[in-house]
Every structure is written in structure tokens, then in C-alpha cells.
Length: 118
Image (cartoon, rainbow, N blue to C red):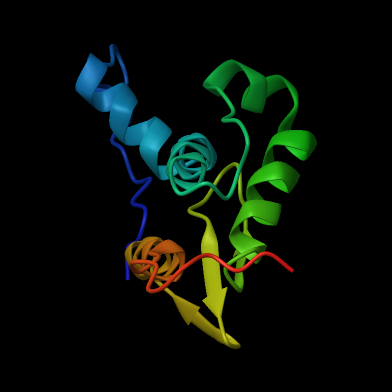
């Protein structure tokens, strides 16, 4: 399971490179943004949220993403200062497993036979 390591030596906090910023964003509130993009590509969300929107509208952004996860049976507990937590069928799972479950749930096989309209 993925863990976030926030132990940074004080002397190393002078200046962050773009790679450092990506690591911080990806492990914290950026997970909400990345999840929204992934869930949107799967068709579970009609839109995505940006870093800025998430920063200023945390409640709305996280609720939007959590609702997307719920569509595939995953409970996502978002966190601004820690990694998000993902649960499936009552058990905690890694983010990677959550992404796989969402993808596998959304895969549709070929249509066999004529379409039937009721």
C-alpha cells in the first residue's frame, strides 16, 4: 500500500523543483485532481477538478470525486494533508488497486446480437 512520507529536513526546504512539486501534489490534495481526471476518462464523472478549484473549494471537489468512486463501489476518504484512503467491500485497499477496480468495472465487452429497445 502506498504511503506518504512527509519527513523533510528543514535545510532542504529552501526551494522546490517542479519534480518536487509534482510529488507533493500527487501525494496530497493532488490525488483528488488526479482521481477526477481518471474517473472522468472512465465516464464516471462528467468533469474534472483543477488544483486551484480543489484548493479553494475543497468540500465540493472532494465530494464530487468521492461520488465518482462510489459509482464503482469504492469508498474514498479524501484528505488534504495525508494520502486518500480507499475501501472496497469493507476492506482498505491501495490507490493502485482502486484504480484497477474502477477500470475493470467500467470495461464493457462487445455487444452480441441486435440492440433491444424496450
